[in-house]
Image 1 (cartoon, rainbow over the protein chains, first blue to last red):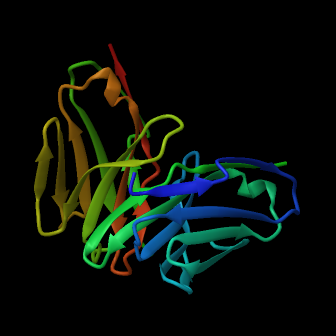
Image 2: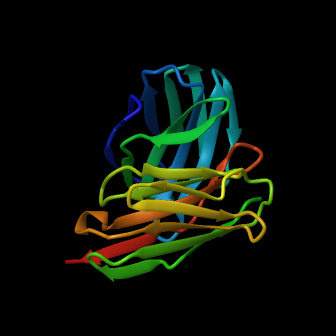
Amino acid sequence: DAGITQSPRHKVTETGTPVTLRCHQTENHRYMYWYRQDPGHGLRLIHYSYGVKDTDKGEVSDGYSVSRSKTEDFLLTLESATSSQTSVYFCAIRQGQGRETQYFGPGTRLLVL
Amino acid sequence: GENVEQHPSTLSVQEGDSAVIKCTYSDSASNYFPWYKQELGKRPQLIIDIRSNVGEKKDQRIAVTLNKTAKHFSLHITETQPEDSAVYFCAALNAGNMLTFGGGTRLMVKP
């Protein structure tokens, strides 16, 4: 499982509230990613990080922000949750340059009411 | 940006038959193509991958083929078993090292 954990695993929140999801890895991987998974859309990249404090936007970044203050943690924040952000969120890691394979965490199921 | 189309969206086969899932991509600079299997409620797990300098790769009952000229790649599963039932995703890695995923194929293997 590439030493990836996500917390919380399930969350129910209300529209307009801030939400932070955490991805934690124990194997010192440089690259970390946040995806969302919705029926019919596969997995879509929200943000990614290529090192501590180095992040960039993905395909569907609007309404989301990220932070990476240490190698092992990559945080995804929904500033003001909306019902359209109800989804399953997966974190992934990549082992490094020249090693393209991404491994996924167990996922967080988020419901925004 | 990269666009990956995956077909079919659902596939039903009898146990023991073969299953083929096809993907096309748009960015000719894409050079790495993984396939993931996702069981219900679980994380996507890599089952096989192929790089652009290779035309075919096999791993037991699973094989992937790549046609760079036509920009398409396919997953082949032979002698399907009920435990092969899952959703399968293809993906393409572009020059910016970002993966773009297809929409997924739900494979059902009937005993």
